[in-house]
Image 1 (cartoon, helix red, strand yellow):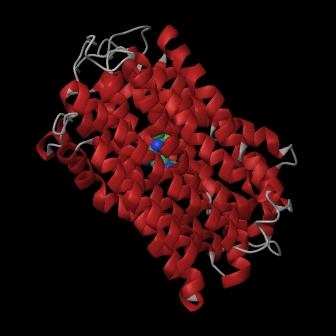
Image 2 (cartoon, rainbow, N blue to C red):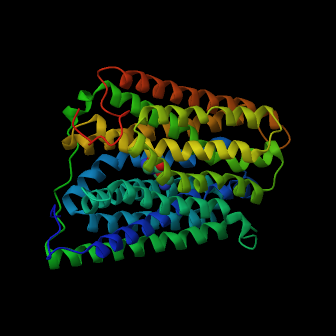
Image 3 (cartoon, rainbow, N blue to C red):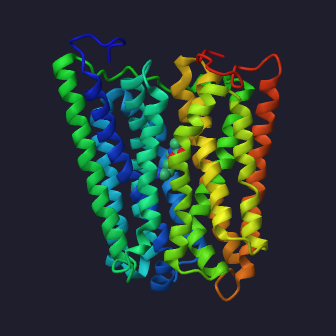
Length: 433
Ligand SMILES: C[C@H](NC(=O)[C@@H](N)CCCCN)C(=O)O
């Protein structure tokens, strides 16, 4: 990609078209990932899935991501974003089909079949996200990069929102398989849009000589330990934050139906407030952070918002919408500031390593928590007949949310001193630490 547009470079419209195709693929990616959760009550009924097995569906996804993320980054470098997007899109689409078909083919091993599907999805999905983020970096660097990234996440979250809302398609939710067949179809859309994106990229490469494989930052293992302490506070927050919010989303349908006695449709609608507020809030908070700075403070506020909802849902009769709104605000505020914050804390040349390492750590925390919550749910005998069994699960989530706040507080304290990196200043040009 050339730095400055020349008459012989793709125009502005072409850039946004590339973003649109790539973000549409991300819509499919996020839909397929989230489509499983509204189906969990039906999986319990059909196959007697335990809490641990539900948690392990996420853990298989995370383990696959952990095993392949770094190699996937290298592949993005070697093959280029176009070819790797199609490759990972194809793997993701295959995973979504396996999830829909394997349990029907071997009902006696439904959980195992579904875990295999989630594993394949994990390989395609997280590597595809790396490729899609790289696409935005390549096409928008020095231009509208923050806005473009927010837009891509907005369209991706629309996929999560649609999946959360899907139980309202009642004709589909008569058994576990039809919703997952719809997800598999959207996996096909994900692959189709990845191909459209790749065609746009390759066309630009042929016509303008733009696409360049090998231009992405590579992960240098020796560099991994040499990041500044502030970076590790951000990683800590990233791990605690996502290991709270994603596993909560995994168990939310079961928790809300068991503990609060709402229908699966209502649980889905309540849960969909999270991606909805995140979609609306992320571009706004991103804009605010660019204008006022105070990024560490904003992250501290966002992570503080994550603590009360679990206790409110567990111990009060306050409207569930209030807890969902607090979680949704946190889900907008923290991601909007956290990911761009890394650019202030590490040199440009090591940005790729920094993101790869942060995502790697995120997956470890998320995997452990999903499995752990399932174990705790089972140990407590949580069910509609014994709702109190959910209380330890809610305490685990609240405790991890507190840990996230502690990391953001440490970051805020270190940024206020003379050795800050400019996170608290407005309109600071991202510079090397
Ligand atoms: C930007 C961030 N994305 C991630 O953390 C991904 N590694 C995992 C996405 C899982 C859903 N497909 C986010 O979505 O906030």
